[in-house]
Image 1 (cartoon, rainbow, N blue to C red):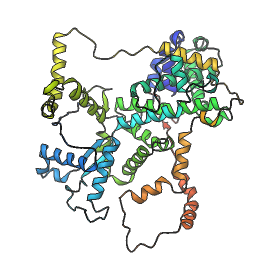
Image 2: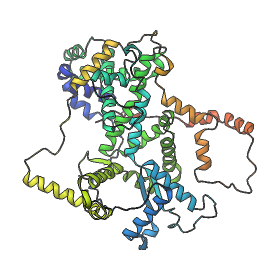
Image 3: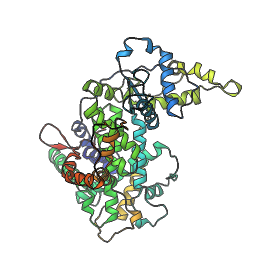
Image 4: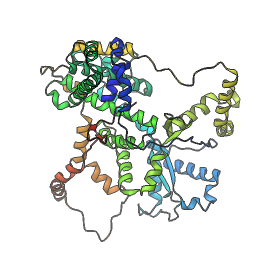
Length: 509
Protein backbone atom coordinates (compact mmCIF):
# COMPACT_ATOMS: atom_id res chain seq x y z
CA UNK A 1 0.00 0.00 0.00
CA UNK A 2 3.01 2.30 0.27
CA UNK A 3 3.40 2.46 -3.50
CA UNK A 4 -0.35 2.82 -3.96
CA UNK A 5 -0.52 5.74 -1.55
CA UNK A 6 2.33 7.57 -3.28
CA UNK A 7 0.71 7.02 -6.68
CA UNK A 8 -2.61 8.35 -5.39
CA UNK A 9 -0.90 11.44 -4.00
CA UNK A 10 0.69 12.08 -7.40
CA UNK A 11 -2.36 11.42 -9.57
CA UNK A 12 -5.59 11.91 -7.66
CA UNK A 13 -4.85 14.38 -4.88
CA UNK A 14 -6.13 17.44 -6.71
CA UNK A 15 -3.93 20.52 -6.65
CA UNK A 16 -1.46 18.89 -4.26
CA UNK A 17 -0.85 16.13 -6.83
CA UNK A 18 1.47 18.40 -8.81
CA UNK A 19 3.80 18.53 -5.81
CA UNK A 20 4.11 14.73 -5.73
CA UNK A 21 4.40 14.00 -9.45
CA UNK A 22 8.20 13.98 -9.35
CA UNK A 23 8.01 10.84 -7.19
CA UNK A 24 5.82 8.92 -9.64
CA UNK A 25 8.64 7.47 -11.74
CA UNK A 26 10.82 6.29 -8.87
CA UNK A 27 7.74 4.88 -7.14
CA UNK A 28 6.99 2.67 -10.16
CA UNK A 29 10.54 1.33 -10.29
CA UNK A 30 10.44 0.28 -6.63
CA UNK A 31 7.10 -1.48 -6.61
CA UNK A 32 7.52 -5.06 -5.37
CA UNK A 33 6.49 -8.00 -7.52
CA UNK A 34 6.40 -11.72 -6.89
CA UNK A 35 7.88 -13.18 -10.04
CA UNK A 36 7.82 -14.85 -12.45
CA UNK A 37 4.85 -13.44 -14.34
CA UNK A 38 3.06 -15.54 -16.90
CA UNK A 39 4.88 -15.37 -20.25
CA UNK A 40 2.97 -13.37 -22.82
CA UNK A 41 0.93 -15.43 -25.26
CA UNK A 42 -2.25 -15.21 -27.27
CA UNK A 43 -4.77 -17.68 -25.91
CA UNK A 44 -6.66 -19.67 -28.52
CA UNK A 45 -10.35 -20.25 -27.92
CA UNK A 46 -12.40 -22.92 -29.68
CA UNK A 47 -16.11 -22.39 -28.90
CA UNK A 48 -18.29 -25.49 -29.11
CA UNK A 49 -21.96 -25.71 -30.10
CA UNK A 50 -24.48 -24.72 -27.46
CA UNK A 51 -25.92 -27.83 -25.81
CA UNK A 52 -29.59 -28.16 -24.91
CA UNK A 53 -28.87 -30.27 -21.82
CA UNK A 54 -30.20 -29.80 -18.31
CA UNK A 55 -27.34 -28.66 -16.07
CA UNK A 56 -29.15 -27.94 -12.83
CA UNK A 57 -28.01 -31.23 -11.29
CA UNK A 58 -24.81 -33.18 -10.80
CA UNK A 59 -25.80 -35.77 -13.41
CA UNK A 60 -26.54 -32.99 -15.89
CA UNK A 61 -23.03 -31.57 -15.49
CA UNK A 62 -21.53 -35.04 -15.95
CA UNK A 63 -23.64 -35.49 -19.10
CA UNK A 64 -22.28 -32.23 -20.50
CA UNK A 65 -18.70 -33.38 -19.91
CA UNK A 66 -19.39 -36.65 -21.71
CA UNK A 67 -21.12 -34.83 -24.58
CA UNK A 68 -18.16 -32.47 -24.97
CA UNK A 69 -15.88 -35.49 -25.24
CA UNK A 70 -18.10 -36.93 -27.95
CA UNK A 71 -18.20 -33.67 -29.94
CA UNK A 72 -14.43 -33.14 -29.80
CA UNK A 73 -13.76 -36.90 -30.24
CA UNK A 74 -10.92 -36.71 -27.76
CA UNK A 75 -12.16 -39.90 -26.13
CA UNK A 76 -10.95 -41.81 -29.21
CA UNK A 77 -7.41 -40.51 -28.83
CA UNK A 78 -4.87 -42.75 -27.13
CA UNK A 79 -2.98 -39.62 -26.09
CA UNK A 80 -6.05 -38.33 -24.26
CA UNK A 81 -6.25 -41.50 -22.20
CA UNK A 82 -2.84 -40.66 -20.74
CA UNK A 83 -3.71 -37.07 -19.80
CA UNK A 84 -5.72 -35.19 -17.18
CA UNK A 85 -8.33 -32.59 -18.10
CA UNK A 86 -8.69 -29.25 -16.32
CA UNK A 87 -12.29 -28.23 -15.65
CA UNK A 88 -13.07 -24.80 -14.24
CA UNK A 89 -16.20 -22.79 -13.61
CA UNK A 90 -18.25 -21.32 -10.82
CA UNK A 91 -18.40 -22.98 -7.42
CA UNK A 92 -21.68 -24.80 -8.06
CA UNK A 93 -20.32 -26.42 -11.23
CA UNK A 94 -17.15 -27.53 -9.44
CA UNK A 95 -19.11 -28.99 -6.53
CA UNK A 96 -21.37 -30.95 -8.87
CA UNK A 97 -18.45 -32.38 -10.82
CA UNK A 98 -16.70 -33.35 -7.59
CA UNK A 99 -19.82 -35.05 -6.26
CA UNK A 100 -20.26 -37.12 -9.44
CA UNK A 101 -16.58 -38.02 -9.51
CA UNK A 102 -16.66 -39.08 -5.85
CA UNK A 103 -19.72 -41.25 -6.35
CA UNK A 104 -18.25 -42.97 -9.40
CA UNK A 105 -14.81 -43.64 -7.95
CA UNK A 106 -13.48 -46.02 -5.34
CA UNK A 107 -13.04 -43.18 -2.85
CA UNK A 108 -16.68 -43.44 -1.83
CA UNK A 109 -16.62 -47.27 -1.64
CA UNK A 110 -20.22 -47.44 -2.78
CA UNK A 111 -21.88 -50.20 -4.84
CA UNK A 112 -22.12 -47.89 -7.88
CA UNK A 113 -18.43 -47.11 -8.25
CA UNK A 114 -16.86 -47.45 -11.70
CA UNK A 115 -13.29 -48.64 -12.13
CA UNK A 116 -12.71 -47.14 -15.58
CA UNK A 117 -11.04 -43.73 -15.11
CA UNK A 118 -12.91 -42.21 -18.06
CA UNK A 119 -16.29 -43.39 -16.91
CA UNK A 120 -15.77 -42.29 -13.32
CA UNK A 121 -14.33 -38.88 -14.36
CA UNK A 122 -11.26 -39.30 -12.16
CA UNK A 123 -9.16 -37.73 -14.93
CA UNK A 124 -10.89 -34.39 -14.27
CA UNK A 125 -9.13 -31.70 -12.23
CA UNK A 126 -11.92 -29.27 -11.23
CA UNK A 127 -11.19 -25.94 -9.54
CA UNK A 128 -13.16 -22.73 -9.06
CA UNK A 129 -12.47 -19.89 -11.48
CA UNK A 130 -11.03 -16.60 -10.33
CA UNK A 131 -13.72 -14.16 -11.47
CA UNK A 132 -16.37 -15.75 -9.27
CA UNK A 133 -13.85 -15.76 -6.41
CA UNK A 134 -13.19 -12.06 -7.05
CA UNK A 135 -16.93 -11.33 -6.95
CA UNK A 136 -17.15 -13.23 -3.67
CA UNK A 137 -14.31 -11.12 -2.27
CA UNK A 138 -16.10 -7.91 -3.26
CA UNK A 139 -19.37 -9.15 -1.76
CA UNK A 140 -17.61 -10.09 1.49
CA UNK A 141 -16.13 -6.59 1.83
CA UNK A 142 -19.47 -4.97 0.99
CA UNK A 143 -21.43 -6.95 3.58
CA UNK A 144 -18.74 -6.58 6.25
CA UNK A 145 -18.22 -2.84 5.93
CA UNK A 146 -21.54 -1.61 4.52
CA UNK A 147 -22.78 -0.44 7.90
CA UNK A 148 -26.36 0.16 8.90
CA UNK A 149 -28.44 2.32 6.53
CA UNK A 150 -30.12 5.51 7.70
CA UNK A 151 -28.13 5.86 10.92
CA UNK A 152 -26.76 9.13 12.23
CA UNK A 153 -23.57 10.27 10.46
CA UNK A 154 -21.60 10.11 13.72
CA UNK A 155 -22.55 6.43 14.15
CA UNK A 156 -21.07 5.36 10.82
CA UNK A 157 -18.99 8.13 9.25
CA UNK A 158 -16.69 5.69 7.42
CA UNK A 159 -19.18 2.99 6.41
CA UNK A 160 -19.70 2.23 2.75
CA UNK A 161 -23.35 3.24 3.04
CA UNK A 162 -22.26 6.65 4.31
CA UNK A 163 -19.82 7.04 1.42
CA UNK A 164 -22.61 6.24 -1.05
CA UNK A 165 -24.58 9.10 0.50
CA UNK A 166 -21.59 11.45 0.34
CA UNK A 167 -21.01 10.68 -3.33
CA UNK A 168 -24.77 10.93 -4.03
CA UNK A 169 -24.72 7.60 -5.85
CA UNK A 170 -27.58 5.20 -6.27
CA UNK A 171 -28.00 2.97 -3.25
CA UNK A 172 -26.73 -0.63 -3.46
CA UNK A 173 -29.31 -3.22 -2.35
CA UNK A 174 -27.35 -5.17 0.22
CA UNK A 175 -29.67 -8.21 0.23
CA UNK A 176 -30.17 -8.43 -3.53
CA UNK A 177 -28.03 -9.12 -6.56
CA UNK A 178 -25.75 -6.20 -7.32
CA UNK A 179 -23.51 -5.12 -10.16
CA UNK A 180 -19.95 -6.18 -9.46
CA UNK A 181 -18.33 -3.15 -11.07
CA UNK A 182 -20.42 -0.77 -8.97
CA UNK A 183 -19.27 -2.45 -5.76
CA UNK A 184 -15.64 -2.60 -6.90
CA UNK A 185 -15.57 1.11 -7.72
CA UNK A 186 -17.13 1.99 -4.38
CA UNK A 187 -14.61 -0.13 -2.45
CA UNK A 188 -11.62 1.21 -4.38
CA UNK A 189 -12.66 4.88 -4.13
CA UNK A 190 -13.30 4.53 -0.40
CA UNK A 191 -9.89 2.88 0.01
CA UNK A 192 -8.11 5.62 -1.94
CA UNK A 193 -9.71 8.37 0.15
CA UNK A 194 -8.75 6.66 3.42
CA UNK A 195 -5.14 6.25 2.29
CA UNK A 196 -4.87 9.93 1.42
CA UNK A 197 -6.39 10.92 4.75
CA UNK A 198 -4.06 8.76 6.87
CA UNK A 199 -1.03 10.08 4.97
CA UNK A 200 -2.19 13.62 5.74
CA UNK A 201 -2.55 12.81 9.44
CA UNK A 202 0.80 11.01 9.69
CA UNK A 203 2.60 13.86 7.91
CA UNK A 204 1.62 16.27 10.71
CA UNK A 205 0.47 18.93 8.23
CA UNK A 206 -3.02 20.32 7.85
CA UNK A 207 -3.27 19.19 4.23
CA UNK A 208 -1.41 17.23 1.57
CA UNK A 209 -0.66 20.50 -0.18
CA UNK A 210 1.27 21.73 2.87
CA UNK A 211 3.06 18.41 3.06
CA UNK A 212 4.00 18.64 -0.62
CA UNK A 213 5.33 22.15 -0.14
CA UNK A 214 7.44 20.91 2.77
CA UNK A 215 8.92 18.14 0.61
CA UNK A 216 9.67 20.65 -2.16
CA UNK A 217 12.05 22.44 0.19
CA UNK A 218 14.17 19.28 0.56
CA UNK A 219 16.51 17.62 -1.90
CA UNK A 220 15.05 14.87 -4.07
CA UNK A 221 16.66 12.06 -2.08
CA UNK A 222 15.65 13.54 1.27
CA UNK A 223 12.13 14.25 0.05
CA UNK A 224 11.67 10.71 -1.24
CA UNK A 225 12.99 9.22 2.01
CA UNK A 226 10.68 11.46 4.04
CA UNK A 227 7.67 10.58 1.89
CA UNK A 228 8.31 6.84 2.15
CA UNK A 229 8.78 7.09 5.91
CA UNK A 230 5.51 8.95 6.39
CA UNK A 231 3.52 6.65 4.12
CA UNK A 232 5.03 3.49 5.64
CA UNK A 233 4.25 4.65 9.17
CA UNK A 234 0.71 5.56 8.14
CA UNK A 235 0.08 2.17 6.56
CA UNK A 236 1.52 0.25 9.51
CA UNK A 237 -0.36 2.32 12.08
CA UNK A 238 -3.78 2.46 10.43
CA UNK A 239 -4.03 -1.20 9.41
CA UNK A 240 -3.71 -2.58 12.94
CA UNK A 241 -7.20 -2.59 14.51
CA UNK A 242 -5.80 -3.36 17.97
CA UNK A 243 -4.37 0.18 18.05
CA UNK A 244 -7.89 1.64 18.01
CA UNK A 245 -8.62 0.33 21.52
CA UNK A 246 -12.15 1.53 22.39
CA UNK A 247 -12.54 3.84 19.37
CA UNK A 248 -14.96 1.76 17.28
CA UNK A 249 -15.16 4.30 14.44
CA UNK A 250 -11.38 4.22 13.97
CA UNK A 251 -11.37 0.42 14.33
CA UNK A 252 -13.96 0.00 11.57
CA UNK A 253 -11.90 2.12 9.19
CA UNK A 254 -8.70 0.24 10.08
CA UNK A 255 -10.36 -3.09 9.31
CA UNK A 256 -11.49 -1.78 5.93
CA UNK A 257 -8.04 -0.40 5.14
CA UNK A 258 -6.61 -3.84 5.94
CA UNK A 259 -9.17 -5.90 3.96
CA UNK A 260 -9.79 -3.82 0.83
CA UNK A 261 -6.18 -3.79 -0.55
CA UNK A 262 -6.40 -7.57 -1.02
CA UNK A 263 -9.21 -7.12 -3.54
CA UNK A 264 -7.34 -4.41 -5.39
CA UNK A 265 -4.11 -6.40 -5.47
CA UNK A 266 -6.02 -9.49 -6.64
CA UNK A 267 -7.58 -7.51 -9.50
CA UNK A 268 -4.22 -6.03 -10.51
CA UNK A 269 -2.42 -9.38 -10.25
CA UNK A 270 -4.93 -10.96 -12.62
CA UNK A 271 -4.42 -8.17 -15.12
CA UNK A 272 -0.62 -8.60 -15.23
CA UNK A 273 -0.59 -12.42 -14.89
CA UNK A 274 1.04 -12.56 -11.46
CA UNK A 275 -0.02 -16.09 -10.46
CA UNK A 276 2.27 -16.20 -7.41
CA UNK A 277 0.52 -13.18 -5.92
CA UNK A 278 -2.87 -14.68 -6.81
CA UNK A 279 -1.95 -17.87 -4.98
CA UNK A 280 -0.86 -15.87 -1.94
CA UNK A 281 -4.10 -13.87 -1.77
CA UNK A 282 -6.21 -17.00 -2.19
CA UNK A 283 -4.38 -18.40 0.83
CA UNK A 284 -5.47 -15.43 2.94
CA UNK A 285 -9.00 -15.43 1.52
CA UNK A 286 -9.39 -19.07 2.56
CA UNK A 287 -9.43 -17.66 6.10
CA UNK A 288 -11.25 -14.34 5.67
CA UNK A 289 -14.05 -15.84 3.56
CA UNK A 290 -14.89 -18.14 6.45
CA UNK A 291 -14.93 -15.22 8.86
CA UNK A 292 -17.18 -13.29 6.47
CA UNK A 293 -19.67 -16.14 6.22
CA UNK A 294 -18.65 -17.31 2.72
CA UNK A 295 -18.07 -20.84 3.98
CA UNK A 296 -18.56 -22.69 0.69
CA UNK A 297 -15.94 -20.66 -1.15
CA UNK A 298 -13.70 -20.87 1.93
CA UNK A 299 -13.92 -24.66 1.81
CA UNK A 300 -13.17 -24.68 -1.92
CA UNK A 301 -10.11 -22.45 -1.39
CA UNK A 302 -9.01 -24.76 1.41
CA UNK A 303 -9.28 -27.73 -0.95
CA UNK A 304 -7.40 -25.80 -3.64
CA UNK A 305 -4.63 -24.91 -1.19
CA UNK A 306 -4.39 -28.52 -0.01
CA UNK A 307 -4.06 -29.75 -3.60
CA UNK A 308 -1.33 -27.23 -4.42
CA UNK A 309 0.72 -28.04 -1.32
CA UNK A 310 0.09 -31.74 -0.67
CA UNK A 311 -1.88 -33.53 -3.40
CA UNK A 312 -0.88 -32.34 -6.86
CA UNK A 313 2.61 -32.97 -8.24
CA UNK A 314 4.67 -29.95 -9.24
CA UNK A 315 3.93 -30.25 -13.02
CA UNK A 316 0.19 -30.34 -12.34
CA UNK A 317 0.42 -27.33 -10.01
CA UNK A 318 2.24 -25.36 -12.70
CA UNK A 319 -0.33 -26.48 -15.27
CA UNK A 320 -3.26 -25.30 -13.16
CA UNK A 321 -1.69 -21.97 -12.20
CA UNK A 322 -0.69 -21.18 -15.79
CA UNK A 323 -4.17 -21.93 -17.14
CA UNK A 324 -6.25 -19.95 -14.66
CA UNK A 325 -5.94 -16.90 -16.91
CA UNK A 326 -6.26 -16.21 -20.62
CA UNK A 327 -4.84 -13.43 -22.77
CA UNK A 328 -6.82 -12.78 -25.93
CA UNK A 329 -4.64 -9.90 -27.17
CA UNK A 330 -1.10 -10.83 -26.13
CA UNK A 331 -0.69 -7.47 -24.38
CA UNK A 332 1.29 -7.14 -21.18
CA UNK A 333 -1.74 -6.24 -19.05
CA UNK A 334 -4.27 -8.18 -21.09
CA UNK A 335 -4.86 -11.17 -18.81
CA UNK A 336 -8.32 -12.04 -17.53
CA UNK A 337 -10.06 -14.95 -15.85
CA UNK A 338 -11.32 -17.93 -17.83
CA UNK A 339 -14.83 -17.62 -16.42
CA UNK A 340 -14.90 -13.92 -17.32
CA UNK A 341 -14.14 -14.94 -20.90
CA UNK A 342 -17.02 -17.42 -20.67
CA UNK A 343 -19.32 -14.66 -19.41
CA UNK A 344 -18.32 -12.55 -22.42
CA UNK A 345 -19.07 -15.48 -24.70
CA UNK A 346 -22.49 -15.89 -23.11
CA UNK A 347 -23.17 -12.19 -23.65
CA UNK A 348 -22.25 -12.34 -27.33
CA UNK A 349 -24.31 -15.49 -27.87
CA UNK A 350 -27.41 -14.48 -25.91
CA UNK A 351 -27.50 -10.74 -26.61
CA UNK A 352 -25.49 -9.71 -29.66
CA UNK A 353 -25.88 -12.62 -32.07
CA UNK A 354 -29.13 -14.17 -30.88
CA UNK A 355 -31.98 -14.69 -33.31
CA UNK A 356 -35.14 -12.64 -32.93
CA UNK A 357 -38.75 -13.67 -33.15
CA UNK A 358 -39.63 -17.06 -34.60
CA UNK A 359 -36.01 -17.68 -35.62
CA UNK A 360 -34.90 -17.96 -31.99
CA UNK A 361 -34.18 -21.63 -31.37
CA UNK A 362 -31.60 -23.95 -29.88
CA UNK A 363 -30.63 -24.96 -33.40
CA UNK A 364 -29.64 -21.38 -34.21
CA UNK A 365 -27.67 -21.06 -30.98
CA UNK A 366 -25.78 -24.28 -31.71
CA UNK A 367 -24.93 -22.99 -35.19
CA UNK A 368 -23.80 -19.49 -34.24
CA UNK A 369 -21.92 -20.24 -31.00
CA UNK A 370 -18.88 -21.92 -32.68
CA UNK A 371 -18.54 -18.84 -34.92
CA UNK A 372 -18.35 -16.26 -32.15
CA UNK A 373 -14.60 -15.67 -32.33
CA UNK A 374 -14.70 -15.36 -36.12
CA UNK A 375 -17.61 -12.91 -35.95
CA UNK A 376 -15.80 -10.80 -33.37
CA UNK A 377 -12.62 -10.70 -35.47
CA UNK A 378 -14.68 -9.76 -38.53
CA UNK A 379 -16.40 -6.94 -36.65
CA UNK A 380 -13.02 -5.64 -35.48
CA UNK A 381 -11.61 -5.68 -39.02
CA UNK A 382 -14.66 -3.88 -40.45
CA UNK A 383 -14.50 -1.21 -37.76
CA UNK A 384 -10.78 -0.77 -38.35
CA UNK A 385 -11.25 -0.40 -42.11
CA UNK A 386 -14.42 1.69 -42.32
CA UNK A 387 -15.00 3.32 -38.95
CA UNK A 388 -13.18 6.49 -37.80
CA UNK A 389 -9.96 6.03 -35.89
CA UNK A 390 -10.60 5.49 -32.19
CA UNK A 391 -8.23 4.58 -29.42
CA UNK A 392 -8.04 0.92 -28.47
CA UNK A 393 -8.17 1.53 -24.74
CA UNK A 394 -10.43 3.26 -22.25
CA UNK A 395 -9.51 6.58 -20.73
CA UNK A 396 -8.79 6.43 -17.03
CA UNK A 397 -11.72 8.09 -15.24
CA UNK A 398 -11.00 11.21 -13.22
CA UNK A 399 -11.49 10.38 -9.56
CA UNK A 400 -10.63 13.81 -8.24
CA UNK A 401 -14.21 14.90 -7.49
CA UNK A 402 -15.08 11.66 -5.68
CA UNK A 403 -11.86 11.62 -3.68
CA UNK A 404 -12.22 15.26 -2.67
CA UNK A 405 -15.74 14.60 -1.39
CA UNK A 406 -14.71 11.47 0.52
CA UNK A 407 -11.54 12.92 2.03
CA UNK A 408 -13.47 16.02 3.10
CA UNK A 409 -16.05 13.82 4.82
CA UNK A 410 -13.34 11.76 6.56
CA UNK A 411 -11.53 14.90 7.72
CA UNK A 412 -14.67 16.62 9.03
CA UNK A 413 -15.76 13.47 10.87
CA UNK A 414 -12.24 12.97 12.26
CA UNK A 415 -12.47 9.28 11.44
CA UNK A 416 -8.73 8.64 11.73
CA UNK A 417 -8.19 10.74 14.85
CA UNK A 418 -8.22 8.66 18.04
CA UNK A 419 -11.18 9.27 20.33
CA UNK A 420 -11.70 6.62 23.04
CA UNK A 421 -15.25 7.84 23.69
CA UNK A 422 -16.55 6.78 20.26
CA UNK A 423 -18.14 3.49 21.24
CA UNK A 424 -20.70 1.99 18.87
CA UNK A 425 -23.44 -0.56 19.25
CA UNK A 426 -22.59 -4.14 18.39
CA UNK A 427 -24.61 -3.97 15.17
CA UNK A 428 -22.51 -1.02 13.99
CA UNK A 429 -19.10 -2.59 14.67
CA UNK A 430 -17.46 -4.20 11.63
CA UNK A 431 -16.45 -7.81 12.00
CA UNK A 432 -12.77 -8.75 12.06
CA UNK A 433 -13.09 -11.45 9.40
CA UNK A 434 -9.45 -12.54 9.66
CA UNK A 435 -9.64 -13.12 13.41
CA UNK A 436 -13.04 -14.79 13.09
CA UNK A 437 -11.79 -17.09 10.34
CA UNK A 438 -8.69 -18.10 12.28
CA UNK A 439 -10.77 -18.71 15.40
CA UNK A 440 -13.13 -20.94 13.40
CA UNK A 441 -10.27 -23.03 12.03
CA UNK A 442 -8.60 -23.40 15.43
CA UNK A 443 -11.71 -24.13 17.46
CA UNK A 444 -13.14 -27.50 18.47
CA UNK A 445 -14.85 -29.32 15.57
CA UNK A 446 -12.72 -27.28 13.18
CA UNK A 447 -13.55 -27.18 9.45
CA UNK A 448 -9.98 -28.38 8.86
CA UNK A 449 -10.74 -31.57 10.81
CA UNK A 450 -13.85 -32.15 8.72
CA UNK A 451 -11.92 -31.45 5.54
CA UNK A 452 -9.16 -33.90 6.44
CA UNK A 453 -11.75 -36.53 7.28
CA UNK A 454 -13.91 -36.22 4.17
CA UNK A 455 -11.62 -34.79 1.49
CA UNK A 456 -11.45 -38.18 -0.24
CA UNK A 457 -15.15 -38.83 0.25
CA UNK A 458 -14.47 -41.79 2.59
CA UNK A 459 -17.78 -42.86 4.13
CA UNK A 460 -16.88 -46.44 5.04
CA UNK A 461 -13.78 -46.50 7.29
CA UNK A 462 -11.21 -49.27 7.25
CA UNK A 463 -12.66 -52.34 9.02
CA UNK A 464 -9.32 -52.90 10.79
CA UNK A 465 -9.35 -49.36 12.14
CA UNK A 466 -10.29 -49.15 15.85
CA UNK A 467 -13.48 -47.50 16.95
CA UNK A 468 -13.47 -43.73 17.08
CA UNK A 469 -12.71 -41.88 20.26
CA UNK A 470 -15.38 -40.47 22.45
CA UNK A 471 -16.22 -36.80 22.40
CA UNK A 472 -14.26 -36.13 25.58
CA UNK A 473 -11.13 -37.95 24.38
CA UNK A 474 -11.28 -36.25 21.00
CA UNK A 475 -11.67 -32.88 22.68
CA UNK A 476 -8.64 -33.58 24.89
CA UNK A 477 -6.54 -34.56 21.88
CA UNK A 478 -7.50 -31.39 20.03
CA UNK A 479 -6.67 -29.32 23.11
CA UNK A 480 -3.25 -30.94 23.53
CA UNK A 481 -2.36 -30.12 19.93
CA UNK A 482 -3.71 -26.57 20.04
CA UNK A 483 -0.28 -24.97 20.26
CA UNK A 484 0.93 -26.89 17.22
CA UNK A 485 -2.19 -25.91 15.29
CA UNK A 486 -1.71 -22.26 16.16
CA UNK A 487 1.85 -22.37 14.90
CA UNK A 488 0.80 -23.99 11.63
CA UNK A 489 -1.95 -21.51 10.76
CA UNK A 490 0.15 -18.43 10.22
CA UNK A 491 0.41 -16.08 7.28
CA UNK A 492 3.33 -14.00 6.13
CA UNK A 493 2.44 -11.65 3.31
CA UNK A 494 5.62 -9.57 3.45
CA UNK A 495 8.07 -10.00 0.60
CA UNK A 496 11.79 -9.31 0.82
CA UNK A 497 12.94 -7.08 -2.03
CA UNK A 498 16.42 -8.64 -2.02
CA UNK A 499 18.07 -5.78 -0.14
CA UNK A 500 17.12 -7.02 3.29
CA UNK A 501 14.11 -4.71 3.56
CA UNK A 502 10.59 -6.06 3.94
CA UNK A 503 8.21 -4.57 1.42
CA UNK A 504 4.45 -4.82 1.20
CA UNK A 505 3.52 -6.73 -2.01
CA UNK A 506 0.04 -5.26 -2.35
CA UNK A 507 0.90 -1.90 -3.88
CA UNK A 508 1.74 -2.20 -7.54
CA UNK A 509 -0.36 -1.08 -10.47
